[in-house]
Picture 1 (spheres, one colour):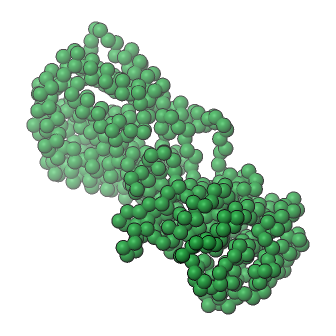
Picture 2: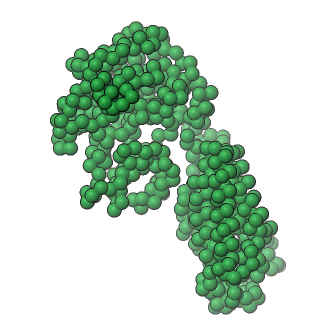
Length: 571
């Protein structure tokens, strides 16, 4: 976690100025992109990052990636921006995934974005395919592309970081005057945009050579006319692009004029092989289900299912408590479990808290003070560690249940479905805590067995002090809870090893993970001086099958939290 709220989940890309991560904002519960720029020297904030943040403060446009926050710590500077699900234009060009009409519409969207920036005296200076993001639902029409990375932008007034003579940007897309160190104008962005569109239509950049020196020699020379490479493109459109690539900035059209030329020829351009075709979208992982104004059918079904599972698990906890406490004539276990299940399904957090409180109070009222203390010891950490994951609060109950059938380690795979590393680690640790407490209450080996010094339920059931001495104290004064750390770590790293990108790599990652699981449990068993953990081999093998099978079946994302619609998988 960085800046106290952003959990870095996986790398999206890297460049000379830092690494971009997909991250989860724990405070606002949304996915964001975080650019991490390593700290250099004693400066608290990177000059480039400060420039980008200062520029972003001037811009507010749907065609420009929004910047949310600039922050720093002792290690790095962080730029937090909106997450744009999709691919950059460079990737799409390499895959041949943009049609002629797609390119024109991307150009129109970028013209609008640049016009907004230029109006606010911001020159981007680094327009190129890699800085153009095409969103995952491009069939919506013009405006489905966003311009990113204003880190080398020039503020036309009051910018002490930019001086005449500075040469910044990307050589192969740089306007001639920019490469010569002259003070740039909006015409420089027009040139770079035209070159980007030229490459998208032809598949190659006419400026780029085999070496930086060769590229530099081509700067400022007349480039091959677009129609020499694509004679099928409309004449007026090709002329507009050629004019925008004029070495003399005074001869280039304005952004507005270039936009008009792109828009005028839109109907005459082909859609073949482009982003409006489902096959292309599916091949690139860009296909997305659109959501309606309310919950769509899929999202609603997933939400109902997650709450139903949470309710059923909570009801199972109540039945387990009755089983341990023994039958009573006053309360029907089935009725109590049913009420709890419904309450948790309807109100996951409130229902769970009320049910847990009622269960502890009932145990205390019936003279089972010791058992009430042990139940409370398992319940209290749950909302503290999983504050925003209401439908996950009953999930740790599955650990002792799986342990009872000799498959305790399989629970770690379930914990590994959490959305963030923290959530996965918390679920893993809580699952082992509940398993260990169940072993204490039942005096039965579910994995490692009860620790030395613990006593059977009847010795401490009716007394808080006896429960503390003979049930909880042995857990905290011996290595009995050490496995909770291993379970937390194994759950946290599982999605990093089984990613769904390649079945071969997933199998390799899953086997490495299973080997780590076995090694950790054998090592802990040696430390505590016990026998081999119950169900370790079977649990590890089945864990590999479940982990890889779930990813292969497309069940990559965890169930949604209580009050949210599931996030769609991002490409």
